[in-house]
Length: 397
Ligand code: PMP
Ligand code: GLU
Image (tube, rainbow, N blue to C red; front, side, top):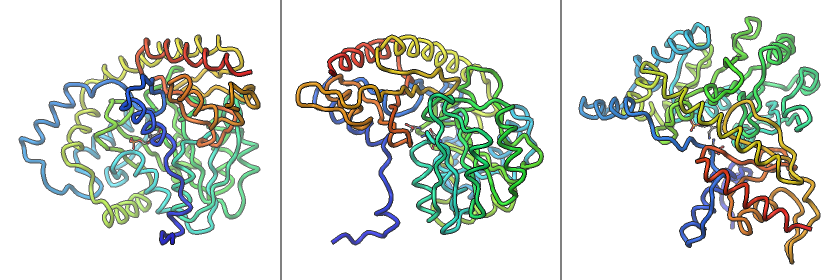
C-alpha cells in the first residue's frame, strides 16, 4: 500500500538529475556516453576560492553559522548587488541557503498559500512547478514557443493574471532555453505587474554572469514593483561552485525574515566553510568569471553552428546560460527498426540508447516539442555529440 503523503505522491522526480543518473549508469556499464544532460559548469572552482575554504577550515569555521549566513558573506552580497546590479539592499534583506534551489523553494514556501496561483512561463526549469506543488499552490503555465524566442509577452502575462495569482517565477538568462529578457522586455512585464499589486516576482538570476549580449538586467530595477521582487542568485554557475551549495534570497525584509524562520526549522544556515568560499568568490578577483563566460560563448557558437546543420532540428540562438533547446517535433511519428518516436521523451531515450548522447526531454521543461542539451563541456565532446545525434536522427524514417 502506498503510504506516502499526497504531497510526495504528486511530486515528479527531477528529470535533469534522473537523466544524468541514467547516463552515469550506462557509463558504469562501459558504454561511451557523452553527457549533455545535467547543467553545471565543467570548470574547477577558481584557486583563490579553494584557498579561502582551506583557510576557513584551519580557522575553525566549524560551528553553526547564523541561519541567514555570516554577516561577512551577506555584506559581500550587498556589495555585489550594489556594484553589479545597481540595487540597494541591507544585510538583513539577504538570506543565504543551501544553493539557489533551496532559495527558490524557500521563497515559494513563504509566499504561496494552498490554492494560490503561481505563473510559470514555459519552458521552465524542472523544479519550479514541483516547488509550487509542494506549497500546494497551482502552477499556471504560460507557453512561449521557439517562434517568440521562448519569452512571454506582457499581453500573455496580463492574460494569465487572476485574483488568485500570487507570484510569477521568472528565469533570465533561462534554463532550459538560454533566452535572455532585454531591459525593454522586462519593463513591459513590470508595467503589467505594476497594475496587480498582489503579484510577487521570484526572479531567478542564477545565470546572470553567463550572458552573451551584455549587461545583466534584473526585473528588480523597476521602482514600481521593486518591493515585490525576490531575487534568487548564488555562486553555483558564475564561479563553478555547484557542489558547494550556496545561494541567496534578496528581497523585502519581511519576506527574508520569513525565509529565515523557515530555514531555521529545517536546515539552519548553510555549510560554514562554503560560506567563506562564497565570500571569497564575491570579494575576490572576477577575471575567472569572465574567462568561463568567454569559453561558454565560444561553445555556444560551436553547438549552434553544428546543430543548425542537423536536418530536422530547429534551433534558437541562446543569449545566455549554457543550454540549447532545439525543436525536434519533425521527428515525431518516425521510426528506426521497431523503435518509433512519438514524443520528446522517446527522442531523448533514443538519442541516449542509439546515439549514446544524454540530453533531457523538453517535456520536463513544459515544452514537449524540444529537447535540452547542456554545452558546459569540452569542444571535442560537443563536436562528437552532435555528430552522433545527426547520425542517429538520420536513421529515423
Ligand atoms: N535555478 C536554475 C534555473 C537552475 O538551473 C539551477 C541549477 N540547477 C538552480 C536554480 C539551482 O542552483 P544551485 O545549484 O545553486 O542550487
Ligand atoms: N541546473 C542544472 C540542470 O538544470 C542542475 C540540475 C538540477 O538541479 O536540476 O540541469
